[in-house]
Image (tube, rainbow, N blue to C red; front, side, top):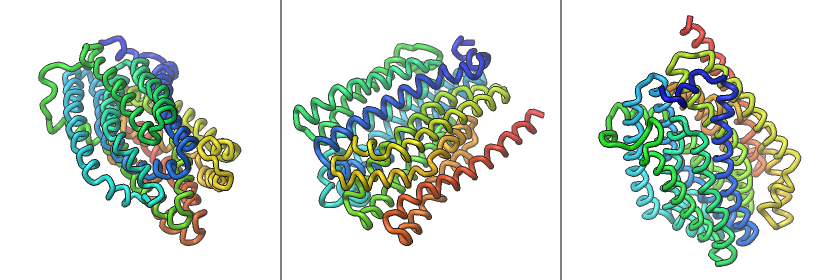
Amino acid sequence: MDKRLQELATMPVGRLLLRYSIPAVVGIVVMQLYNIVDRIFIGQVVGTDAIAGLAITFPLTNITTALGVLIGAGASARVSIMLGNKDEASALKVAGNSLVLTLSIGAVYVALFYLFLDDLLVLFGATAANISYARDMMLYVLPGLFLTNIAFSFNNIMRSSGFPARAMVTMFIGAGVNVILDPIFIYLLDWGIKGAAIATDIAMAVSALFVMSHFVKGRGVIRFKRGIYKLDRRIVWGIIGIGAAPCIVNLASCLINILINHTVNRYGGSDAIASVGVFVTLTAFVVAFIIGICQGMQPIVGYNYGAKQFKRLRRAFGLTAGIATAVSLLGWLGGQLLSVPLTKVFITDDELITATARTLSIATSMFWTVGIQIVATTFFQSIGRVEKSIFLSLTRQVLFLIPALLLLPGMYGLKGVWLSFPTSDIAAFVVTIAMILWQFRSMRSERA
């Protein structure tokens, strides 16, 4: 057995989780940091309407992310389970089929987005004040989003096959290039919001080349070779089945962003949309940290589930849930105690700073519950329980948040938009706890 795979079965779970989670957390947080750097430069140099325009693009980027994780998350989970079952041949075919699917889907959505860009931006809530910024961003960033999907998908497979540190380096390379290019393109060359997009394109091209070279050179068990690229219906549906849950989460985020943009514009105008941009940016950073921890958990849970080592599986879940809850608690504290200084990083208008800070305080009032929700969704995905992962991924963003967004603004105006988030957070938290307790009871019965 490959040494890295043997460690998944024998190394103490706490040390294993640190070994896999730290590179994943560092990598994904670095990726988020360069997104934040983009938005800081855009907000401070270009202005409030540009931040609002950026917020309008979030649904489009969520769609591309959804299509990326459909393949990347599904493939990485399948690889972990197959390696746990000692089925290396099938794991190789998963990698080859994933490459074909990623390239094919990416080519289709890039072409469609270019053809219908303005119509989509209006649908997503663009106004006369901010549509030009949104258009400039998307015209240039679409190739970079396609490259992001390639880097993301195979970065996950790299981690699942025993290379967490190398997966982290992939993220560092892209982030470093982006941070260097952002001030040059946005400020020195005065390219504005399109400069941020071009910097992202170049950064993700470098990341994609790095991660693909890992599989071309044949490092580790998973590598590119002849005979693994022909699409196999069983393998394709296995990838899509597991990847459906995180894909649906991102598609739901798209719908939520559209609904928020239109509702906020109705009650507060373009400035309120800028507040949405700040809120989404800051909470996404905390969520990215949690997702990084979950990415570290995923190969441990998937491998040990395939190997029927349920005690190690439960230990990995418990440690991950505890850490994720602590992180979401820190995010809650930041939203309550540091809302004003955090807002000032992105916005220069004093009146809008006050309004946005108040928004953050309300919207994050139950944010401490989010950590375990993300961990539980990833857990069900990692063990191949597709229907449970999908259901849980829908609870917070669809089953609870959409009704709240439709009901509360009519009662409380703009404040009702922000009250919708804590309302859905606590409801989804209750459902999550119930599902996890039931799952572990069933596992004890299965082992008995």
